[in-house]
Length: 225
Image (tube, rainbow, N blue to C red):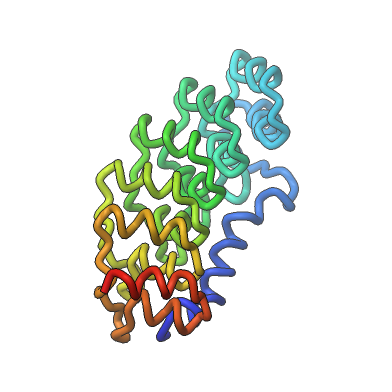
């Protein structure tokens, strides 16, 4: 693979993996303590029904119960950007790093969706930034590729190396440039991203932006060379 553009099929598959839950039926692979309560908890999370969540937790529903996709109520809240629900599940003892069967953590889901408030809450609760999903991508790659500058700022503030290379040695700047995300590119450059860095095929972020036809981003990157 040579450019960000050539990674499009991988990116689409990864984004589908993150987005798929909302279209599938409820999961019932629950903890054995009280499977009915646990199943209802997941339904309440999908519906954003805080009253039902409170009732079920009080009755003993397990905060880390998961559906057949491996998603907890906290992961569902993170996907939907429901900060109130995320806060309640964390307070109830939900594992902020519990991943789905696709390897998607709550932080990845919130970063993909651009839900900065949830990202901030997860980081404060100890969410790890380095896990990779089954597409070998961490939270920051989704934030960069989708242009979520506010989320990028939070992730970088947690100590992530702005110039770290992930699969194929693609940096967050390369992902943002290849997807034409001007705001994300601007932020990454301001935070010290190196435009001269090259992926495993020798291409820079500028070359990726040009190859994908993102003139504004290419002009921005050309100005810092």
